[in-house]
Image (cartoon, rainbow, N blue to C red; front, side, top):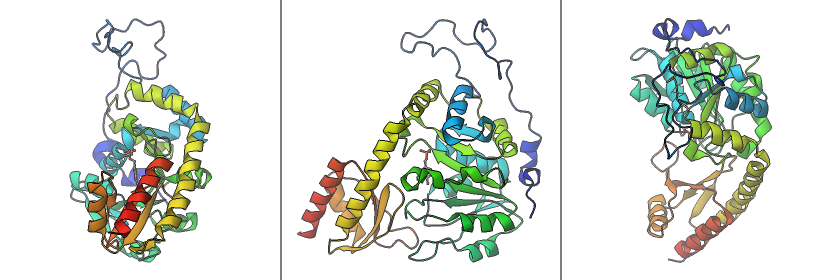
Length: 353
Ligand SMILES: *Cc1c(COP(=O)(O)O)cnc(C)c1O
């Protein structure tokens, strides 16, 4: 099938005259800046923060491009991947007419942003137990009105992954955008990312975030990696200064210290294996699902009881039992060794209540 972004972009976005500024794309050194009503005096609490941040995030994008081995033109930066999800829906889905497909149990924000934008959500459940994609059902549910299919791999909260072959199968029949959310890819294998596939598959959009493996959740930075035509539309729609200056500088620095990040990811992966093994030994644990994310989905005899016991002891885990297919399931984020030890101590006590 032939994908053409101009067939799926909302007409008002295609025709949109975006905000523009004289500064766009300029190197501002040596210029006197009297164009956008900033205060020329620096605020004593934030030196240099009197100026608006770089709207195109030029140096941060080239830094990320180097690390991720893509071109800066293929990157859109958002205020967390949450903003990226929202802007994709806003650009491509006509409210009250278009629809998206999601595959629960999965990340909750796809549905929330679709609802905010008044866009219909079709849910195609993952297969029971294996949590594999149900490709046949996705195909059946797809209509001319389906603009986006969200696929999360490794998936939150199951920790399961989707093989490239399955994604490729979807690219071949689908004329909208396949959004591959790789928030947890580094806890699987960084080089399993489908970012490198965007060149030959124009309808693949990859979401990544600096909130998880990069340990920068408070900075709020997420990104879309996709072909340039898609990125251009997102740039047209975004708030001009959506990434603040603290964040641009902090993430730039974090990218200079990749080895540190890799160290922590290695520890978390070890802890994940260790926790999975230990969890299986409790009598109230029915199943520990294999996980490629930084969390473990665990089926227990009574999830509410366990959740409340942990909460009473000041440990917050996630009770996922209300999600489809996840009766009595809780999700533990894999913490640092000290935190994980605390969890096991509490679970020992819970076992002996
Ligand atoms: C945590 C998470 C994100 C990241 O969201 P940010 O807004 O970038 O912090 C995105 N997708 C999934 C599936 C997640 O679990």
